[in-house]
Length: 270
Image 1 (cartoon, helix red, strand yellow):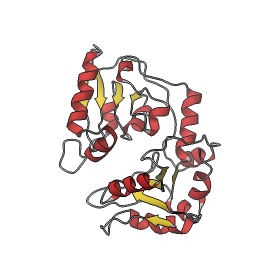
Image 2: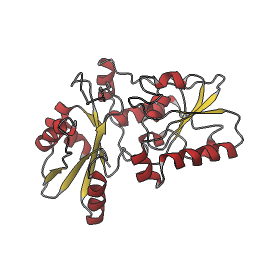
Image 3: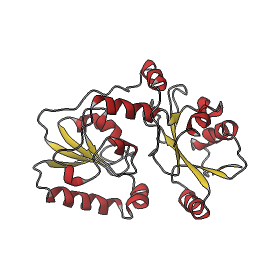
Image 4: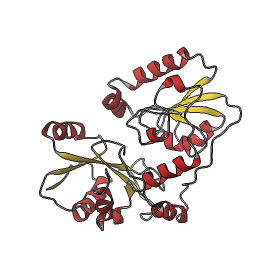
């Protein structure tokens, strides 16, 4: 049975995604759960799935996609260019296979930036610290967002690196990052540090290496330990392009989900 966990908000994007999942995902005669984000009772629901050994999938905004309007309510502006990630047993894809590149070419033809541009090798001024939301941070790191920030700053200082640390939180209406562009903070940036934020993708797509949690989708091509802060991982073009081909094979439009393409591709993943 396909079980889509509803969120009690009529504007939630899951209300558009669940009918597509229910139509496009094949019922294999076992309980398969789908969760949109970690809102509502989803954390408890995921925990119950894990305790019972049930299969569960996490659905959220895509990795490389046209952006949606988030506030005051989510709006999809172009359904053909808006992709959503679907991850098995995790909030990021961590076991994806490398695709054949056709989906990467498709996104490029849609005007979505999928080009690896190399790495900035010039002078840099700062380290950019981008924490995940308080909810994700607690789920992944077992601490508050403030504790995670303090811990990371302390660990960076222990390395002796002589770089200013800049903190960038998720833009929310009314906070200091609202209506700002992360690309401005990535200028002259030595390295971005995060736990699970998709800001890691922004970084590597804008020539800045990153350090991430091992469960972040970018962990394939980033360092995962702050001891490497002075010389973080900078993979070659072949590795980066293989990662990009994997990335786009784990995100889908609502139409692709409804027509069964997401099911077809993801059931063949490791």
